[in-house]
Amino acid sequence: MSQILEGIHSPSDLKSLDISALKELAGEVRKALIETVSRIGGHLASNLGVVELTIALHYVLNCPQDKIIWDVGHQTYTHKLLTGRHEKFSTLRQYKGISGFPSREESPYDFFNVGHASTSISAALGMAISRDLRKEKRIIVSVIGDASLTAGLAFEALNHAGHLGLDLIVVLNDNGMAISRNVGALASHLNRLIASPFYNRLKRNTKYLLGKVPIIGPRTIDLTRKLKESLKGLLVPSIFFEDLGFRYFGPINGHDLEILIDTFQMVKELSGPILVHVITKKGKGYKPAEEQPSRFHGTDPFDVETGAKQGASDILTYSEVFGKTICRLAQRDERVVGITAAMSDGTGLEEFGQTLPDRFFDVGIAEGHAITLAAGLASSGFRPVVAIYSTFLQRAYDQILHDVCLQSLPVVMAIDRAGIVGEDGPTHQGTFDIAYLRHLPNIVLMAPKDENELQHMLFTAINHQGPVGIRYPRGSGLGVKLDSHLRDIEIGRAEKLLDGSDVAILALGSMVQPALEAAGQLAKEGIAATVVNSRFIKPLDEELIGELARSIGSLVIVEDHLLEGGFGSAVLEFLQRVGLTGQKVARVGLPDEFIEHGPRSVLLAKYDLTPSGIVRAVKGFCAK
Image (cartoon, rainbow, N blue to C red; front, side, top):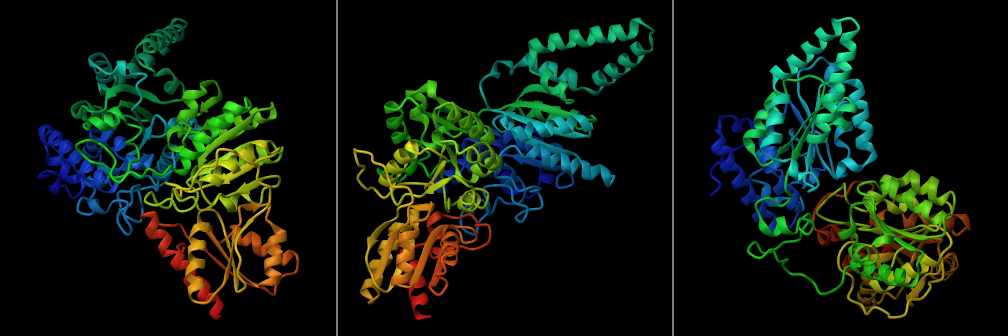
């Protein structure tokens, strides 16, 4: 029984608990996290790592007057449990349930929607400026992970915050192992000392008095500063942050509630930018997640006793096929280099990194850098392949335009998780990549109908003399046989899979198989459909599309992307350009809105991106 947790309806309910009750609450929260995520999937390891940190922050602060901005938002499950969403927690990431990320529409305790990394310090600084302009009294806290701190945006925000000198607390949630040795009694003692109001008053007063002493004073201050920095450099990694204008406290044990509470109680009374360095352990309290934090970062349902995934498929995922194919290509071609942005496991590049470490680069959460790094390699004769999820590739738009496409460099962008992704919701759906890429000169955009075609597209891309993007969906492939011999696909050439005289279905990527199944159902009802595996978004197979437009006259375009600016838009633009404006065209895709969270199968059905949905669309179109 979660007796204490059931009594927590808002953070204010924490105030009446003593430290022993708070520790018991932490245990109940961990149990709730493991039970829920094991049943429906989600982000487990990171959330188990911030249980005490979240409890301590809400115990010390007075939210929603005070504000906590999370970065990345997938570590907010404990926050949701403590802010009135305990009863709805079983609906986490489910269709019409609560989001797996902070959502302003969901709760007054979620102050900023966060799905992409490295935004929290910028957002928190904006809120701090707003507070001061309005002469309000509130504490603003940014909680940022050490991985999120690798992005340029985070450093830009630190630089600006230090320059402005406003009251702002940044909590660096460090779950890496590089500085774990600093956690312990000495570090805790130093933190208590330098965070105490007495110490800070003494330091200010001493500096003021020494500054009044002529000649000797300034020299003494400078000597004291150098001595302090030398000693700190040996004990704590603080100088970098202090040089940016932050007062650094830590590192401290992120699982010691007493130390966390004491630290936050003290630093909230201080002025100016503060950085509190907290060391946490991903997967804390659940042995399988502690031992395999990467696998339990974002996990499918699993057995709590063993940690084994439930209902695991033997069919390779698109990511796995990509990873195996790139290894195969790289072993044949020494020019092939693999690059990713903190997603080596998720994108399938883990094997590449182990097999060819000299030609593998994980740049951290720095997508823009990944693309320009690839451009530099490509300009020097290499064939870099950059594997990034669709939703994160958009963070590198300027680099794709300016550094890759403008110079027509042979960079291959493997766009994983394209289309509807599912439970992670609007911040993670890969529904914009066609729109933000297809208008760029020099780029070739492809989408495979299955995992076997993905192999051939990668082979084609490596041999192409310009930029290439290949978009493919999340999850398992169709289970088709993989060809042993890789071949080039003619650039801009679609594939007619089925002949019919009543309607032509132009399907893209993961929509090809549903289109084929729909054609089978339509045939039973007397409607003969041509089905085309479009393959190329850019360049289009204008010859085939023009032929079908003239001979059949009725086109239905199916894509797992927004209709605005998508593949269908490209077809319509072509038809208008060549004067084929009298043809009947219908488009099946996603509406002009952000796609909510929920199982991928549910969302595909909602937007008619299933065989039955395509049948309804075609029949309705033909009836008109």
